[in-house]
Image (cartoon, rainbow, N blue to C red; front, side, top):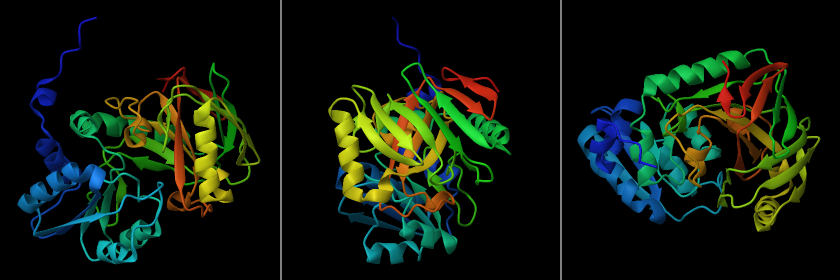
Length: 328
């Protein structure tokens, strides 16, 4: 099968170009602002690229590298948390996400704009930042509109997923990657709509078949039985045990259902990096653990997302996605 031709924008885009688009177009970094680039050794090249571009755009830019965190949602060192509060913008290409941390929450309370980029790869940056931001915005807005006033979400798949998540009254979050206003934060690149289901009320079965944070792209499906909001049984090959062990190491509350989300980025593909995978149009993701960032009450020291492909998604009784195709 012949390879699909790339657009002129994709052909010309380099890592430096992608970093410039991120800082200028999505974050709106200006010449009067201070920028902190927070990274770690595995993503050093990307972090330093942001640092180089940041020197062109910001009044002052700082590059800080810390030890890789063990799981998504693990706090950075206290000194870094304080530094995050002293700048105007933070961009964080890191191995693990700091989105669901007190450090991020306290900084955004003070008006800092923060773009988190956990596990970002050069390919993801170049491909996803070549997308039409207005198109992603339109899809995201449409899904969020349909989710207004919905009481219950149900997801089913041919592989056996059948889970019901009560969400009435929960805050609906639209993540487009455009973070130009005081105190805004989110993933970059982005493209998703997500919320925190009510704690201790989700029931059913999830069969993850895309990827899982901390594990990567799945070789075999991972089946999780959920009772009263907690994952209680994990079935599958070695990847099921890996997920169980990751959650067990974090603690009991890590088994709680913390998030439901729908991907809205038409350029994103399943790569094994949860940053991109959870944004894939035609997928949903369900996360275990900390959901305080999105208005929930789970205080686990980690946040682990898993991807379900080709889902049927019902908002109350309305089918809005059939086998991964949006019907709205």
